[in-house]
Image 1 (cartoon, rainbow, N blue to C red):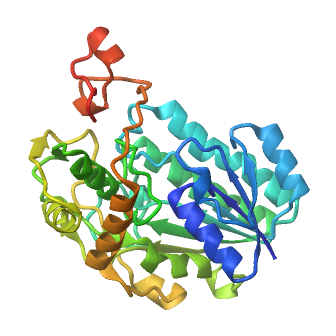
Image 2 (image 1 turned 180 degrees about the vertical axis):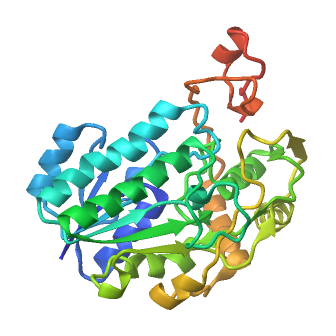
Length: 346
């Protein structure tokens, strides 16, 4: 069986592709390397460096390698920054998905596994349950909501199977340490290694449930199986126990090194205070199990991060720089144009 994995050079996509290949599937991977690294692409994967926003080239690859299963992980997953870069987020989420989904359906795809996000729940009462309505509070969540609804509509009309996964706060080895916009565990580790302060938005008492990739991956792989009981299901996959950001700092500091300083900043616009999900359905349908857990997962990631060493921060200008954006997201160009703040040392 042939499986197409989009976002294959990303952190999660690389792990998923490796896991699928290890059990004997033929894996084709697509990535534009905008947020991932070619070293994350497993050996044996047919890899195409391709921007899914290019519909013509995407059609050609899918036509040459028609998949039985599409696992869609490609995304601009910068949820907090999505209010300041809406075009890129919409292009790399909703439009990229449409561009790969259409030729996949045309080629006779049997199943789609959409990697969505708990961002679709918005600012509802945690824990978020799969039965809750979709009420996104940010541009990223709006895109994921539309992608879920698109999948449901097209599956009904064109009769393919689908399973929607809502992973949350996944971390682990191979995650980018360079991105200042997302992946708080990686950001904290890189700042510690660089001897820089940690920035916290709000008082640090907001709660999240963090998910080590070694715990989530087996469930991700089972989602690609052609099992009737998975068809049409939406499943949260992630950590069982929420903790505060302040508690996360203590754990990361213990495993990664001394924290220089913690600086508390104003809350980011439209950020959900408490964001964690139920997990019972993932146990029932995908046999989710925390074999490692949070502390062991952070220990393993910290060991990998130390071996990799401190990384330079990527420097990218926001489409809509604003005084409401965290000042460390703003560039010298923004400051010169009158936007307060500067990110010379992320």
